Image (tube, helix red, strand yellow):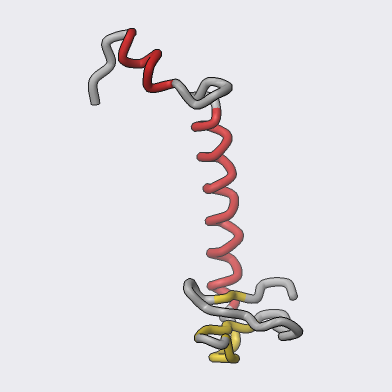
Length: 78
């Protein structure tokens, strides 16, 4: 449900129900604790930043992903 967190590397088995505002972790994933309001706000802010950066960087790539070739032709060196 909304505002739940599944820890990285966790395995959520088929049929598992994860209620809102809970952190689950492990293999198999099990309830760990409730998610704090500050974490919910941080997740929302992080999602906005990731969306912004994804849109910003998507313009750097050509249709087939050869932006590096064009950059080399233009003399760009990192």
